[in-house]
Image 1: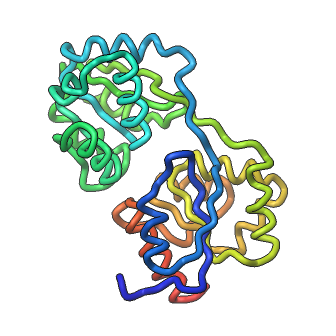
Image 2: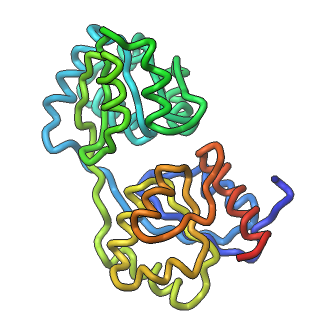
Length: 260
């Protein structure tokens, strides 16, 4: 895979502040020219009290489940803000939805106890199911998060503490004006999406001009993001197999080498 190069190719990376540096780093390593669009940002929960209460009561929890690297970051930021030791989180059993989330946990706290073979919410809930019946499980999640993990853990008999840890905020229309111009000029080979929220933000931000996305390769970091493209009326030309930024970059290179 490493032999495939992206020299002379331009890839737009849609991301939020503090986005997937692994994706951009690998694209640059492969020779791509990168253009960034800050499609989303992350805001504190509308009411931090439930998250604060859960973090102050970590000793009474059995598992803490993270569905994204952002959930890890926002939870740790609040833990630090409350002056609580990260060791209190390290003492719980930890689960991560996929490799990128697992790496964030490992670098900031410790290696997670469970990472599903497939980086999807349904897979995470299914692999946790035998371990959580009758157990207290904390799920820090975005305000507008999907419900697959939440529903799966409840069905498995977990005593679930699901709290809002952050809100995902779409950028204003002006943030997408450069993307509209690049697409109109024909200077883009692929647009990479690392989350469903980025898909929705870009499509809404481009408005009537979103049809121009169909003229380039659209790359999704996993099946959930690919499904968001389908729901928006587009097809994912690339879906990474291991749902990591590095794998997505390699998949884009392979796809562009085959031609559009």
